[in-house]
Length: 186
Image (cartoon, rainbow, N blue to C red; front, side):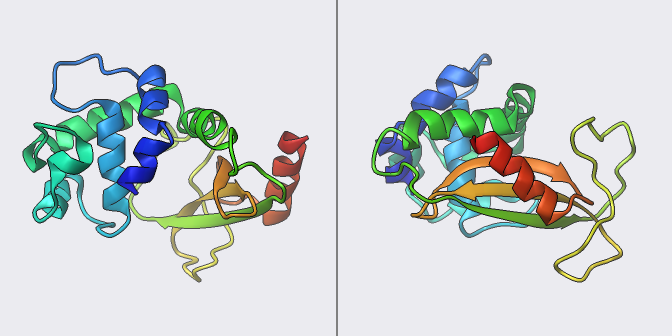
């Protein structure tokens, strides 16, 4: 995964979109690369436990010379997540896809649209909701009617490579999500 991240030039796109503006050891691209690697096998853990994932991993080889697991603290990762939120996660993802994946054999000949909903716990007051996405009750594919949720719609090419994503409110229907993706593809 780290090799693909490097060979596709994803770091350069991230640094162009959300450059590092604070004095810390990791760039936002290095933080995102670390979070991507972590997401492949150490999920559903608190952010402060993040460095533990890298205990037995050659961090400097994957993320860059001089980088160690202690640089992957929750403060640095939180700043990266804040920068992504400010820039727009969908916009950042779509920029990465446009600049890194559509230029070669990862292009699209066939598109598959897959909406997935995620159950969330905790209290979400109305100030958290945006005009576009609301964390609310909807149709649970996991059978958890008691939990609020949000929906992530992904359009992937014939190789299964995600080309577009968008978040939707927790009560959004699959049919409407498919129509939304089709209208954006035209």
